[in-house]
Image (cartoon, rainbow, N blue to C red; front, side):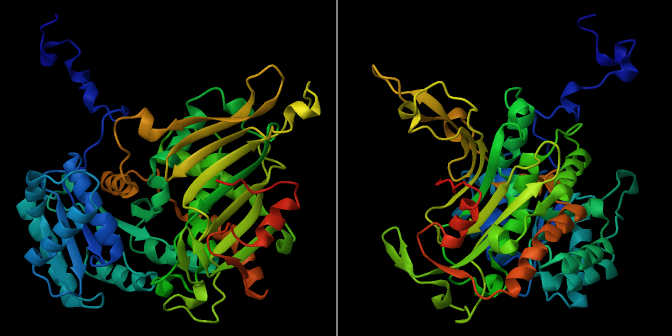
Length: 524
């Protein structure tokens, strides 16, 4: 029977190719026929992230040969002009090497539609362009709309997409179930009320299962590795709870300032920009229970449970801190403070540093404080999750033997040097007994020969595949605002952010906040 063809076997009707088993996640999945329309295609995000990510996916063989890329903007471009813009962006920012044959294939599907967001004629041209792509490129009516635009433009664009029938899943071949999806960049509102209004607006045009909210942190390999670390290994689960964990610190520090970003950042601030989305999502992945499976719905369910149980600690004067950077030294460079940055109001009360203390009311985490902090112009660029363990209840050593011994820690480094560090005590070589902290490192760059894809590569591919695992849903967004809103309201009526010198690690009030609990910030 070794040479029997599949169709000759008695069980031929049940035979299937195991390489096409969708449960097998080892092989990369390739997107089917489709196109992506980018609104705001001339902006920095599109030029530095989206266009290069699309090319990198094509270079890795993960896009269909007949993929279509459509730009929508006010510029008076022909298709060829837009193609040159894409090519320049690819050559300047793509992760993978440039290959002419890959570019030539991608070039065949590049189109441009000139117009403004309130221009019905432009959306008619967009409809015609997509219809032509369906006929000439075989995209099958499958189109994703990427809204890389200011949030106040969402209602207008969504209304036009609906009015021109672009949001409906109709296509040339109904048997193939063509799809339409929308991609939304943060911020997802500026408070709970605006987030609810935005969600209602978006869901009025696209059902929730076809809405993809981009949080690029969730596309990073190290963030996804939190799930592998916790649920693929036996050694961490028994100690991943309040019996052994003293506290958790989640840090996103940046060493850059905000020059040139006043239009977006002034009035938004660090808490809205980072804590509401990135850091609370990292908290949810760190604290969630093991899902039944890695199906998107199951992952979302467990994250929602954690966010539902997360609460602020009162009084907020003592459990939150905010700051605003002033002039100082960033390495060897003298830099100006926020109020001297181009475009910022000299009286701006926008915080560039925010720290909060949270607790999670579950049996696993009861009593364990989670400290979240983020800031601009800090000591160095780093994002990490540090799980700090309790000290041993008894040490059979003289005090002098363990003077240099701290607390055990597991540190997940999200960026820039992706990996994991374990800190534990070890005997110092010599004739005496002295125990001090040592580190054991795992580095992605050293352990694997394949470089990690950019976050936008993974997220764009998931949009085209219809895989929502790494995208926050309505409930997650609204729960995050429900946690943060009291802090924002408290700060709004409580003076100005505390100044801190550029190049340091934030305002003294943040050190005092954590010191009240008998702890201190980890220095990354």
